[in-house]
Image (cartoon, rainbow, N blue to C red):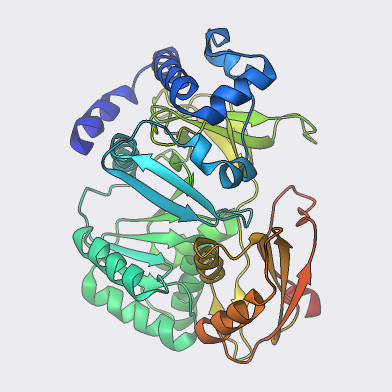
Length: 429
């Protein structure tokens, strides 16, 4: 099924913008009709706002429908899910960039379409299906999840490089491991690959000769980060953008444009209260996830779209810039750096155990001190502090002093970004 969509998407990318919009509208009508019948949440929400599926007569009419948020997903999981049972449906829990753990169901067809669009985009980077990958990513904490991740890595022909512990010794080990395994491309967190690139430059190593390209994801790729990576490895960096709830949203082509995977998603930007009249919060509609439709979903990121067309000739729309996805690295008392995804894994595990944490934020005040800000649910029990402390001291560093603060809401940065993992070490230097 993936191969069928891959071939179709290979052809569709060269269609005109109007061709792609026409396809999007046909798919949008189908999922709107479905959600109105099989998802109680959408049926009720449309009634409350006095709108209906019939009022959406074009893509521009989509904005007439109410949007949904992560809080809606957390509080209405059963009502947003389709009442029609589907086989081969996968379930995923993600922390996301707002600190709210969200559980999403996705049907097999939607997953196949997502993979097809991703493989098509990797082809732009010179990467073929099944090429050897070195993946700079988090390592699951539970024994079962770790086993499953190893199985998936093996089937996907990739080797996982842990993003949780970064020091001179481990970076050296990673380098010589890559020289031996000869990956075709690197894939992973921007901050982790930058740290690795800086180490290679500092050591005077000559990159990894087998590499064709590097694909970065999950965080904002700034020009300085791109330059450091390309200097260290001598190959082109291709950026990827997506979110856990939707999956792949946009990929960079060989001409440097971030093209939206428009066969799978519709992108809107809410410019209300925009400081420049162009940027705003992204709203995404997933066109194929019938197991749990996401219609006008605010994903919590801020971006600017482009009305121009790319020199590559593809009709796919372009995201000019994503403004708010970079996380902070956490430094332990011994000087080792940890990618913040390790804290995401810890809190996602607590969410699955109904810990009563609605939102969280980890703030590093000093090399020895972490402050955990928590927005609690009504049934929250402060005994969970012990679980959090134990997990951090076991998985990160035993020497951290950990303080807890409770609040009604986690405050966004001035940029509009929600920094779930926030280091204040730079302020102390």
